[in-house]
Length: 514
Image (tube, rainbow, N blue to C red):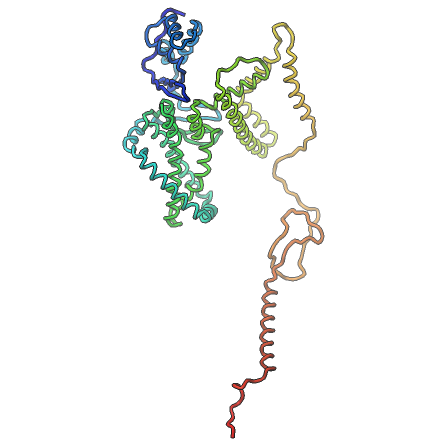
């Protein structure tokens, strides 16, 4: 290492934070918007790079401050990592001059982002005008408003369900799309407004595809600079809170406006669609509100990627000796639990989407559709398949002494043998497609009397036997005749009773006694 180390940039945004009794420092690079998190020891070394310091002096200061030994080789490796990240002046100029222009479209097939506009100035203006939204008074009143709407919805739940099933129809798809788009935009703007109100910057807002499902996004990464965890949680919860208040407003509009009005119909759409949308946003296994709230609560940035990397590390450790990761016991438990749950959820979603695509292609194009499906899967997972192939081939390479590793052959041979055994089992072949089954003989069933069918006990295609009850004929006509005859009998019985009892004194002819 040279005697003169590169100097730390003085335009970096640094936020000290306290988490779980430990002190961390979050550093943001202004031009790229990237964030890096360092511990107390790493940041102490970074601080020494603000001025002219030689490696020997830095190693000595670290030893005096933390009572530990830091070699110049380890310091060189750490400074090189800072250079690659663009935190030092020398390397930052190279990265800034060679870096491509920011792309409007970013991400992968399963998490694609399209940036529309930079809303920072607009949100700064709105944060100044709508600051009352973050006061305790408004939060108390809005919470009471939401609870009142819940009571109204609960007391009218049967009527709401009946209106949703009777009035909502696919013919009015434009109304559903309008409500969903407006709600999603307000949802994301709420995130941005909260981030801007607490002092962050919001540079991106746009369209998002998550597992081919459309959504909107707002880049609120500056929330990681907030020292207070409560503010970070509020920024993540702001969108869902806005949507809950919109749902409450929709409940009262549904109750107050007549059924024939457009407001009533749009409010009904909002009530019917908000439940699914809120559950989706609170799902911690998708990078939406629930995920970021969980990540903020656990104080683990990039929780998903770290958990999946740790899970991959544990999987590779089954086949070869790997160096121990420097993570705490708490992080190991979190990474393992979240990695398994998030990975399983992703596999279920991808499997479900793949089955839908395969069913559609095979039904439409048969064998050609299956080939198209395999091609699409290979294009999407081409990099993953290449990595898997390279890794498998590396496991079967000769050892340094020219012999094969028998343990690796056993570890790969046993699963391969199970796959071969399963493939030899007899499996029923099913072919999807439309078909029609026609009977060889038709049989007509006729009732011996004329009547109206009141109830049918079998469905089309059911197998029936002799003596089975097929239909129940209505006996309303016979019951009416029976009631009429019974009434006539009662009338005649009354007349007979009157005749047998004779005339009363009042009905005898009046005669004058002499």
